[in-house]
Image (cartoon, rainbow, N blue to C red; front, top):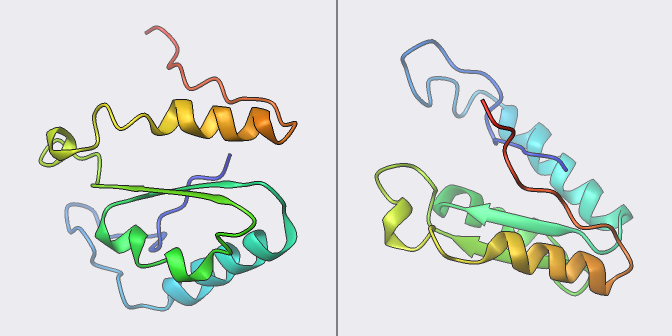
Length: 107
């Protein structure tokens, strides 16, 4: 599993402070290379910014699921209950791959 933000650094308490600093070229290339060279991946594109990366993914080779961002401000507008985790595991199993254990460990 690879969880990837398009901007990999930020100033403390200053969201998106490093957006437009060049990280997007690096992270876009990661998405392209992984999409080109690995079969049967699941791309979970949550939020408008992530969904803008859909053009980098070969949807004929992979499962692409989109939803609103899971932040507290929008989670109830379509993220909660979207079934992405179950759909991802079903796709993986249908393609002979192990499902992901999405459970969080108890604190």
